Structures are given as structure tokens and as C-alpha cells.
Image 1 (tube, rainbow, N blue to C red):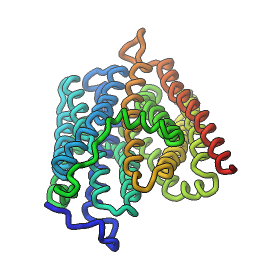
Image 2 (cartoon, rainbow, N blue to C red; image 1 turned 90 degrees about the vertical axis):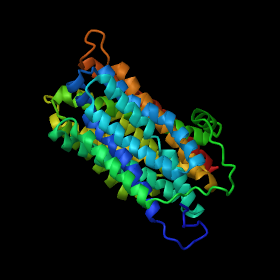
Image 3 (cartoon, rainbow, N blue to C red; image 1 turned 180 degrees about the vertical axis):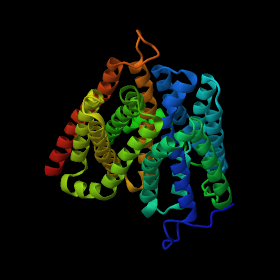
Image 4 (cartoon, rainbow, N blue to C red; image 1 turned 180 degrees about the horizontal axis):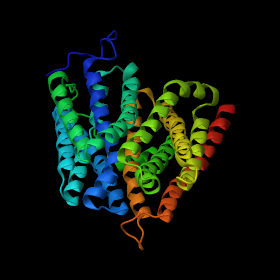
Length: 419
């Protein structure tokens, strides 16, 4: 099936059915990822007796495999087309979620998450599809839809996971399976192929993801932005890995209650990024918003583990996670905007792809690091105040380093602007 829309049609509307379908595909991927955040730790612990160390690696396994599989799926989409790869990846997500929900042993649960990560590595394919169907003028706008899908998925996913957990710990995963299957059917009947075979058949060779990240450092400004984004996501991933276990340990919260807390984080993010962020950029500039956001994250990561039922209670917890959301909502989009401004118009897709690679690697490293930080030799299967403190404080330390680098970057940018 050949795509009827042509880039030459300058008057063509931006929100076409194919673009909306791609947005829904990425959104569902991230909803599935978000659903697991409040549910998976309790599911693994209560159903399979998993320790905090094992839970950390269970969470990391998804992102690790997604990082590895994304360029491979992208290569397959260059060779065989975007549509079949996206369709197969959605069917894989549906099957993986079903395996996770039906798991009866810990190895089978790991297999479900690993398989989900492999088939969920379709971000580069979605980016390629958007590049295929958008004009140069609309390409950055199209790539921005992926960021929007990420944000919305993180908001709705945890809330849905928490609510569905009331009906059983397996139910959220069955919901993801059904949702992904329905999306695959939608994609099959609505999404046309965007890859134009026979035209410029010698496609651009995809580089190694590690190589692209290393090459990005050669451009000092973009390299600093990428490093800042990487450190930010590592620290935030450590927080999301430990947070559910922390609230369960300190407050006795269920996945449903944790889902509401993550939804609170997401709603604040929508408010900030939707209406306030643009005005703050005009007033302070992106570089100083990165500094402010990183300071807020460092302070909140340090302070939150002190909070408990007898030390501030829910009010203090909500204030702490509000700073999580505000800090991330200032620094993350500011870094994305800076990266986009550092890129030439024709290389927006590649630039955002490198930034996404850094984030994917960070989402794998953060939970894996958490697994070691949460491990206690004296009580291998349990959390303790000590392991919680050192895990949160490691995230805080990473953010302090990020603050120092962002201050250097802001000062350098200011001097260049004056010169």
C-alpha cells in the first residue's frame, strides 16, 4: 500500500489519520510502560516473593531490551517498511503483556518484561514514519508529538494501573494486552505504508546507538545538553523505581494509591508544560530553567526519604512529589528545546533520536543501579531505612552533579550571548 500523501502538498493539513495513528501507537506503548510503574513492584513481591534487588532488575530489563532492539527494528523498517514493523511490535506488546499477566513463576515474569522491551522498541520506526510523511517545515512539530505521547502515557498509565489493580494484580496487564491488540487492528486497517521503495533505495545507514551518543559529545554544546538529559533521566528513573517501594514500606500504600500519586505528578506536569513553561522560557530562557529544575529535583530527592506518617505525613509527601514534577517539567522540556535549537533544520529527527537514545539508556541504568542500592546484605529480601536513604540520596547526588554542569553551561551561554 502506497502512501497517498506527498510532502510536496504544502497545503495539506498536519493532523492526518496516519499521524494520529502513530501518536496513538506511541501513547499506548507509554501507557503500558506507565501502568507497570505502580503495579509491577507489588505484583513481583506479592505473587513471586521478589526482593527489592530483583524488582530493580525486573524494571531495568524492559528498558535495556528496548534500547538494544530499537535500532534493529528501525533497520527492519527501512528494509521491509514501517507498517509491518509497527504492526508486529504492537502484537508483540499485546503478547508480552498477556505473558506478564499470566505468569506463574519469576523467570516467566522476566521473560514477559524482556519480550515487551524487545517488541516495544518501535520509537525509531515511529520517528522514521513521521519523517516520511511530514514536510521539512512540520518535521520538528511531528517529532514533538512523540514527546507529547511520552508525557501523556506517563500521566494516564500509572493512574490506570493503580485503578485496575483493585480488580486483581493481573488485571492491569490484561488491559494493556487488549489495548495493544486493538491498536494493532486499528493500525492494520488505517495506517498506509510510508516507505517509498524504489526511490532513493540506498537508505541512510543507521549508526550504532552508542556510537551516535559518543559522536554527539564532539559538538561540545549538544554534548553537554545530551549529558544533562542523560543524568536527569538516570536520577528520575532511580526515583520512579524506588518510590513505589518506599511508599509501601513507609505508608503501607497499595498500587491504587501509588497510581494516584503518579497521576498527581503527571497532572502538575501537564499544567506546567501546557501553559506556564512557554512564558517561563520567555522570561528566564531554557538554560536557567534547566538549572532551576535540577536544583528542585536535587532538593526533593534528598528530602523526601525523611517523610513518613509521623514526619509530615501525606501533606509533606504531596509537597515533595510536587517538586519532583515541577523540577522535571522545567528541566526536561528545556533540554529538549535546547537540543532542537542546536540542530540544523534538516537534522532535527536525528538530534531528537540521539536524545531519545540517551534517555533509553538512562532508563535502563537507573533501575539497575537502584537494584544494587536497595540490596541489603543483612536482609536481602527486605527494604530498610538505610537502603531507602542511600537510593534517594544517590539520585540527589546525580542531580547535584547535573546542577553544577548546568550552571557551567548557563554561564558559558550567557557569556557567548554578551560577546
